[in-house]
Image (cartoon, rainbow, N blue to C red):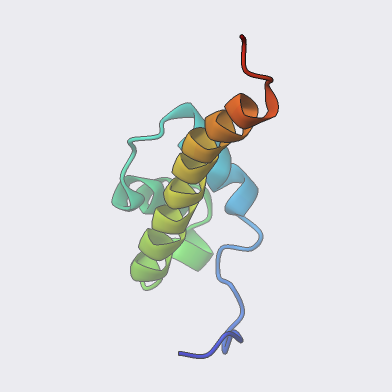
Length: 84
């Protein structure tokens, strides 16, 4: 695998909207998100050609949020002094 991107991110302009939906409804599926995007911006997303890309982005977002939840609480507990 390489670290560089070979294509422009098709969700760069819509990601803030998608992220808002994910925050409001964390269990929503990527397919439902794609349907919402297709309704909002049919010229770009009606064909659902980028569904797999969106699925990967949503998976990455959820993984990052889970790490923040788990490691965030560990960092807080490590920063607090132990009671004697």
